[in-house]
Length: 299
Figure: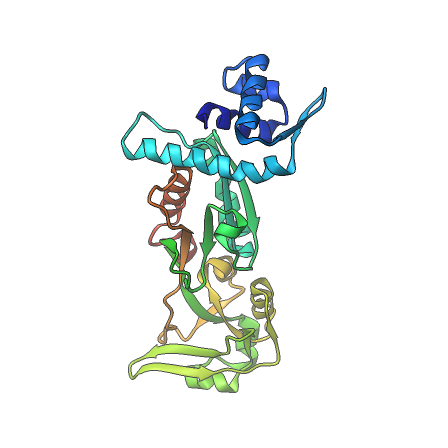
């Protein structure tokens, strides 16, 4: 299978125009058309629908596209592994990330990332569902949950510090707890299924079963409810650092840190060769966040 044919096919899928795709690769329309024809003949299937104005992928072409991109990524990774020239990452990078974290901490940085790597395009899905990377065709997933899939490789991008906080209005009305045990006398806001809070104390780990009149399955709703004075809640510093800076939330129980081994992770399928587009994405955001990310400073 000819690599030049695959490169043209991938660009054709992005432009829906054989002439434009060929021009990007320095090919005449006639040569570009012959490349696609030879690729189809080699596979024995029609990959594109042709009209006088544009082309579009057939169902077979759509199915083949992801595999073509994977082949090109593997070739790039192989060249990079032996230092074969200056390899600029190309192709489409498919990323999935938690919705709130993605909007708050990835989107503001993506413009700079794409400016640094102009040959990359991105498909991004922000969802709180844990998706299957291989089945979904993703190159990278950003996760803050426990990592349970041993078939994935993970790199920590940043710590994910969890704190207990409440609004000044709530504390003015109900008082501030001085120990974890006192949480039993307070309204506590929980995500569904996470009502036992574990603290690190001088006597070891202490688990406190919390209760309250409000609980939710959505992180943003949890932050809003906490800021609105509905109770005390556990929050990640990346999610509420602006609330804390504005004084809308106050950290409590500072002498009793939560027991947590969470982090912000980039995970990707196990592979002998890491594609350059995956490597540069991980390196970029690991450098951006660092061991002391901006959302944890001055808190």
